[in-house]
Length: 546
Picture (cartoon, rainbow, N blue to C red):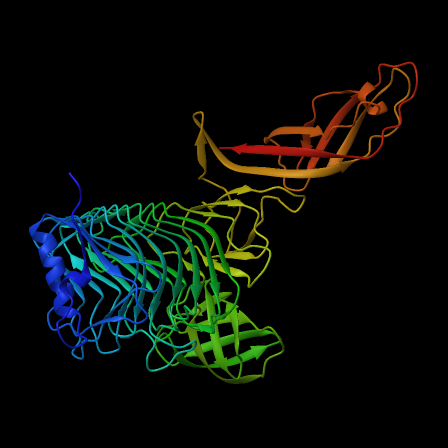
């Protein structure tokens, strides 16, 4: 059976330029057919719709698609009316938006509002522009059945106007999802440009309102995003499990006063677990203090050590936590000690005044882990260019993998597991870590392989120059390998020497770890003449079990 296909021109207004009745009636007609495709022909200007009542999507299988470049549907409502509302019993399946731009004017409502039921198996390859800073592109505050297995791509998705904060910067999330039960899972945003226009709140807000022992939302993700002017953050997550974010780069930020990724407990206590962050980079913008966390304070200094006393009874900061101060001292810093509930110390970047006043903030972070979170993974965070990325692990266990040239992890738990990347710089204490006290950064946690708990994996290279070995002689060569420890399992071998190298005649025994940071290599010369080996690069890897 062929899917019904109709054109918006079939319902064109007989007079005037308001296409709202035509769009409403065309969708209602498709609903009577059990679904179908509404084609919106290309023309040089928008189809303006003065929406007086939100267009209902009450049937499955409705697709709205542009037929050519620059097709625009525009909600010109002067009274905050939503463009589309999804309602009815059960979730709406296959409500698709393809090759089209949907725009909501500054006085119009949400573009898509899921009122009851939900959305399932929807595919959007569309561009959105929400010019009303107090309304969302996608709004969903429901219980069941929820949002499942939807994919959103294309773009850009824009919220607000301007390259810096203005009166038109967003005050609500562009994508605002609030759910109870396990009713928001398997939803992906990918391959799009996101423009937050300096919003005061995160662009994406995924809120799980379940209690602390209630169900998670599962397997939602953001992938391959180019993010512009997200000064108020990109994402706030509560109650998410196996959420993933990968290949996300931030451009043209200004002063960032919200966490770019904020993980927190939901309103009723549900935490986040087992989320994965891969290749997160910030190319522009400075992290400052989190808005609305300001506390008035005074300080005294001794050398570069600054003691801060807040006017309130407590500042609520912990050792190892990042802070931001302005006033007689302006900088980011790490809390060194908390001698009293209303006092803390930090180290100034330059010699500070002997005393003075300042405003104390919680520092905005690139990634802020929730205080009750567990078992997140960070892979290739940072990068070789752009600003150094800062991650607050909130003293929770995590798995860190890969090379980390421009990232620092703060408030690191002893339960941190590191699997380090290649290069001589790779050792157990990289990437850069800041914590109150860490006896062993991989203690008590790890990954399980073949029934054994791997606490750390260390990859490294060492330049080895074997001494001359006489005829039928043998020797032992000791080399320095920072980070290896007695008890580690070792693989250590040279690179290829080439078919004509005299090194090929040497017999290399089994290298072993003879002391912390030290590897010994047995060497035997079975020939009738001395062999003087050339310097070569050896490659090593150790596994630490426990």
